[in-house]
Image (cartoon, rainbow, N blue to C red; front, side, top):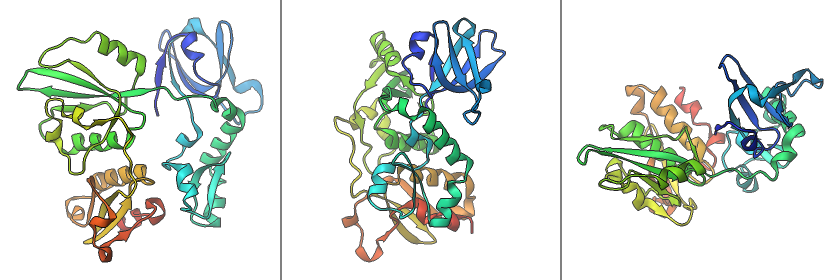
Amino acid sequence: MNLQKICTKSELKKFPLGTLLLTYTLDNLFCLNGYLHSIRTNSFVINTNIFDDNDDSLIKIYFSDIDYIYANPIIIKNLTHIPDVMQSAQSGVTDFPVTIDDIVVYYAYDKKDKAMYKKSLKYITMKKWHDIYGEFMMEYKEPNLYVCLTENNEHEGESWNFYIKLNGNEYELNKLERLIEYHDKTYLYELTLYSPILENEVETIIKHTDHGYMAYNNLIDEYINLPSGFDIDDLYKGGIRDFEQSTEKSYDNLYVQFSYNNIEYYIPIKNNKDDIIKLYDFILYNCDDGEMSKYDLDIFNEFKKDDVDSNEFNLIENLRIFNPYSYLNK
């Protein structure tokens, strides 16, 4: 969830109706949550219960009573945990898609699974929200967000920040976050992946930066392409800048390797990005040392189909449908 902090009416007006708001009063005693329903001269209205057809769920809040607001514009495909939903649906991953306004929000295994999902609170909430506010999101353009990679260089006695564009770099940054979290034994690097920064704030920071061995604040405004086999040493002295490129990385014909009991499977990255990251976290967080010898998911090396012996190329086309957790829970 990309929460953006705002403090004024003019900032709030940039967000479409239906945006999820967390509002904090001046005395910090109250936090009101709801969907932006309307904006008036001195106040705005939030909807605290989209299932209430009466006006009881509509609460008016005066701007003069508010300290600050966190806003999260909801894009319907972002409410799901399925990456690249439109593209995956077109490639025929499932014969039982659940859709809202032609957007696939769930891949069902069969007719029964589809019917059950459409009765779930999650689906009902998404559908109700879209019926009320969906049209207001059509023209909304998500803002450019950045994350900050900090390198604390003991040799130079300096710390350098690298502000990396989040949009279009999500999968590469997820890999970088896990490289730092699980493999940085020196604790020299930090990445604020879950606290993105708005573009105008980054521009101000870069404009007023000081310099030492290098600029203390640096901008990476293009796409990053972390090469297969990269490791923590590749980040030394601003090495992240070596991976910047002008075009978004293509994941066509690129696979990661998942091993279970010495059987190797290959997962196409393109349509499985989110689930690959989730499976990697699951293995590291939930498998003890003994179990770890059974499972391995290598997200830092990427394979092409031609690099693997065809007799050993066990393909997992869709990681969610394959459901590796049924194996991991045995």
